[in-house]
Image (cartoon, rainbow, N blue to C red):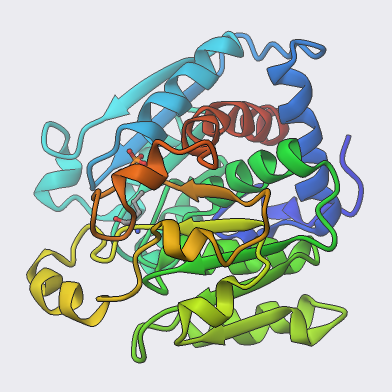
Length: 308
Ligand code: CP
Ligand code: NVA
């Protein structure tokens, strides 16, 4: 179904695991599933969810996506399974591979996710780690494509922490040749390995810019994006980060420097009046709830691809 297949491993641990063509194909399938021009059924397939961190959108959108495909989901809560009692990943992965057809895993370290993938004999999907949130980035670019049609020539400006969400946006942006500008306080830049590898994907290397000035970054941008300043697992740094990120909120002053038809995205959950004002979330520029809906369509497309 998909050309230029980088998915030989059939894992989706990183946005780097897909080729440009695969991203475009997944977005196209998601669009057609959403409009109901496409109906894919994966009868009897079972998705296992392992979530070591909290989740509303990712968990529910995966469950609903699987149900729409005619399959079922088992939510493997680490606190009620042996996972939370320290059973080695290599044992859990091999056992679950005998019951399930695909696993979506949210955990702390990318290395732990890679360990699951190493031992599993079924596809493993990254449902968020410290390094990346690749399913989120697919939904984000679907939302941008729905708004503007053509992606090339668009400018995505991310203001905030250079975290997992920023890393995945950078990689997906590079695959799609979309200009990505990241504005973050000094010391909170995205992962340097991600930046270097993503830069190599761009035909025009100047399309990826990292700056410490949100007002310069936002100038003429078509998409303004932010995420929480302190991610899950960083609770002890909250006070220090709140101070460091002063001046990095998306508010109406910042919006006024962007393109007239700018749209605003946030992966959610949001801390109103920290990284983004309530006024902006509720404004006509916001596509935040369309973006949240698109998690389900994109993951339905992804599951159908990995399991077909
Ligand atoms: N955006 C996102 O991944 O939300 P959840 O943490 O609720 O899954
Ligand atoms: N960067 C956030 C994203 C939550 C969806 C975190 O990792 O907590």
